[in-house]
Structures are given as C-alpha cells and as structure tokens.
Amino acid sequence: MAVFVAPMYAEQLGLGTTMVGLIFMILRFWDLGTDPVMGWLVDTRPTRRGRIKHWLIGSVPILMLGAFLMFMPLGDTVSPAYLVIGLIILWLGFTMLQTPHQSWVPMITTAYDERSRLFMWREIVNTITLLTLLIIPTLLAIYYGIDLRGQVLVMGIILLIVLPSTVTLAVLYVPDPPPKDDEPRMAFSWDAVKVAFQSPNMVRVLLVEVLVGIAIAGTGGTFLFAAKWGFGVEGYAPVVLMVFFIAGFAAMPFWIWLSKRTEKHLTFIATAVWSIATYALYFPFSGWAAQMPGDDQELQRAIILTIPALISGLGYGTPFILARSMVADIIESEQANTGENRSGMYYSLMSGAYKTGASFAIGIPYILLGAWVGFDASGDNSPDVVRGLMFVFVGVPVVAYALAAFAMRNYQLTRAQQADNAAKLAETLSD
Image (cartoon, rainbow, N blue to C red; front, side, top):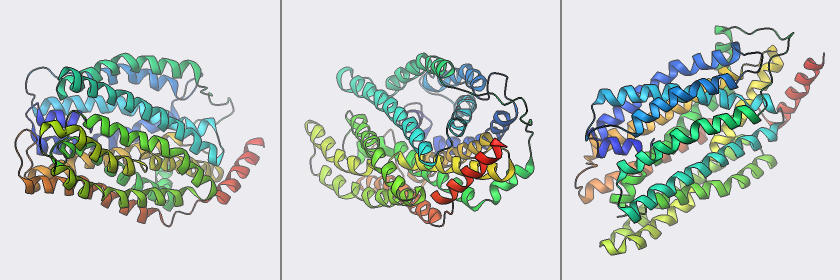
C-alpha cells in the first residue's frame, strides 16, 4: 500500500501527493474505531470451535472487495471520494483479519522467548511474501515496460487468489482452542481499557508502535520517489527495495538471539539506533549516483543505491517482532493479576497504534513533499526539490526511530518478572 498503491494514486491517477497524503492519514483514524470493536469481538464472541477462525473467514469477502477497488481502479483518473470508499472497505477487512491473527500467539504459547520466535516466523513469512511480490513488478517493468499501474493490477490479482487460499490453510491446520466450559464469559469493560492505558509498559509499547509504523511505512511510501529522483533509478527500484527487505529478513535471527541474551526492550533500542545511524548513508550515496548521468548508467546507480539499502535494511522487521512479543508478556502479566485474558483488546490497541503510525507515515511525508518541498510526482523537479525529497525520505524515519528508542528506555517488564508471572498464572490455572 505504501510503496506502490499510494504513489500510483498520487502520480498516475491524478490526485497528487498532498491529497493522497491527507486521505491516507485522515482515514486511517477510521481504524481507531474499528480496531477496539474487533478486539472486543475476539475477546467476547468465541464459538464452540474456537476464538479466532470464524473472524478470519468473515474477513475474506470484505478484504477482497476492498482489494479489487484499490488495486484495480477503472478510468484514467479517480476522484478523492473513490479513494476514500476503497480505503474504508479495505481497512475494515484488514482489521477483521489482522487483529484476530495477532491475538492467536498468546493462545498458542506462554514462553517468553518462544513468543519472539513465533512472531519472528510470522514476520519471516511476511517478508518472503513481500519479496515475491517485489520480484513481479521488477520483471514487468524491465522486460515488458509495464508501468506502476499495471504492476499494482498484477499484485491485486495475486491477492484475490492467494487470500482465500492462505486463510483456508490457517483454518485447517492451526489449533484454535475454544473456551473451557467453566471459563467465565468475558464482557466489554471500560475498566479493562483503563487498566491497559494505565500500564506504563503498554503505553510505551503503543507509542513505539506508532513511531515504528511511521519509520517503516514512511520509508516504503517515499522509496520509489527517492530512488527515481534522488538516485536516478526507476526500473530497478523494486529490486533494491527487495534487498532492503532481504537484509531485514537475514538479520532477524541475530536480533532475536541478542534479545535472548539481554532483554527485549534493550534489543529494540539497539535496532532503532542502528537504523538512525545507517539511514544517513543515503545522502552521500545519492550524491555519488548523481555524478553518473545517462539512462545507460541506471544499473550502476542501482548498485550504488543498493549499498545503503542493504545496510539500513538490517534493522527492518525486528522492532515489530519485539513489540508484539512484549505485548504478549503484558497480556500474561495482566492475566496473572486479574484472571482475564484480553489478548483481543490488547492486540487491537497495537493494531490501531501501528495503523496510526502508518497513516502519519503517508500523510506527513506526502504533505511535506507537496506543500513544503514543492515536489511533483508526475513532473520535473529541480535539484533543490530533489534535495528536499531526500531530507524527507531520511528525516522522517530517523526522527521516528530516535523517539521510539527514547520511549523504550524505561520499559520495566523484564525476563525475570515474566517468569514470575508465568509461574503465578500456571499455579492459578492448575487450581
């Protein structure tokens, strides 16, 4: 959505960066209403067969309709109203899928490091999927000359085919234990929501989730612009972005290994500091690429862009794993104290926090590019405008990562405290 769909609406469908940024940012707050409702439904509306799978099944037709509207728009241009309606439907379906899916992990394992491992594999599968999709537009652009809109169309077709297939596999093969007969039925409680926001640990995790969403989606949303105008790379840009994701994929086991030998929040800070330091590399390498004019030099410029993408990409992905794993620990801590497992509510708050960050990540850079820098996605841009583009491309994620590292420094739920909570909960359940 950030890397391909938003630029398509801004550049090829006539809406411009400022309008697309405003719509993406404002409408993402729609999820601030739907996410808590979805979390409440997951917690309070199980079936005799489980808590999760019926919600995944229900999300499929809504998400497929939203994907059809967003990835396959008709006509040479669209109105802002079309984008608004498409986004509302798509994000409603995504909320119905994502919140139950994330809530599944605390129901499968209670081990401190095992949660990180499960979320790591979830992120690895997600990254493999991203890499697969990034190969397709690269081949279409290089060998067939298909533009961004055609590439997005192919992605939409793939999504419409794969979504029902993968949900079917999850429903058939992943355990979804139903509530026990003597388990009290949970109801919505404002007190439970209040407890979540009174937890300093949860507030910190929610804040860093917003900030990481800004950093990651901000990078993706402006990457094609930075590659094209800052480095002179267009056809090979998806390949370079694929390298960025591969680097994050390859580094995940190292960061998880580090978290096993330290603490999750310390490793989170380390990944943020790494990203802050390495994003600055895009500036000198952009200047180097600018010294190689001519269409016949695009491959060489792509190689230059690959170097900072590879190095900065080593911090990608792991912050998501660690934050979600920390939420599982917080859920367990609250369950040990209150006897209630409200994983749906907690992960709906996480989902809303990330989506808020992702909305700002499209809104803030696009508005800055259009209203402050004067960037024109469909026209020519002066060297000063391109320089401003690079400052936005680098500056937004760097500031977000710095604030996230600062917020996480006083996180309190350590490995030892989690072990105590797990033992207390096990004793309670055995009684």
